[in-house]
Image (cartoon, rainbow, N blue to C red; front, side):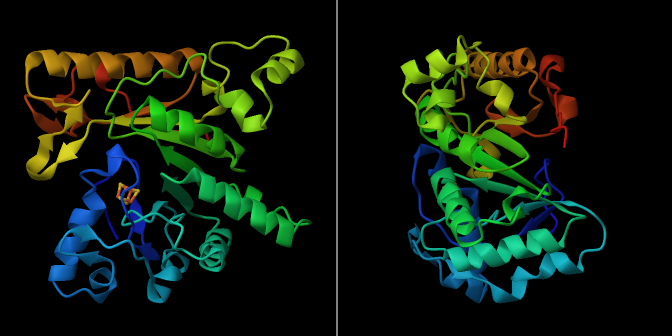
Length: 295
Ligand code: SF4
């Protein structure tokens, strides 16, 4: 399905449905859309939402599964924009079938964005056990991306993301709900399962951007509320000039960290006068940055 999301060309939803797992899910856009589509009679969505939003179920859509095989023109494909492919209720067998489609569609680039990279990793490990002799997981046409809205989720999710086999790995800080610091973070040693001491002894020394240099992409964007209003930052709605300034400073810091580590940055949307603005031409000059991974 065509989309307005600036960092992709197409959405592909062989799985829909989810449940909220962290603060970044509070104003889940997919949930809002799913409720609307369910009320219009779409069966696929009626099975996954109730009056209060997601009901925790997932719908495996056989009809959609093979859609990308019919798209001739190469495109960037956002997988599961209406859920999470690595939700615990999605059977590994079905994820495997999605990966078979990815393998068969070398002309497309599949963007796998999740808040559950630990399940992505489990899936990859299980598959490797079943087929240890194939190079199947190192397909070059998928990107492994994790959403991290604050320092806590960055600390939890990024060590797992770094263990997922992928040629391109990235972090989406959208919605950015707090300042995030990627310098001197413990992700590198956690991703190896070593202790910090073992890691330092083996490496000799580490540079402050060692972790960030292992990423290939950083997406940044503010939270969007219904009605296109800007969402929260540091626990408050972004409405006053002071709150805007705090958010801008956090973005400046992230862009600078990306620059220092040589990681491409894609700045998706920012708050201006309490509204979310996605048109890059309306951004202050310093924020006009939309870079892509060097695939
Ligand atoms: S993980 Fe994604 S799809 Fe699921 S509730 Fe959170 S924001 Fe929504």
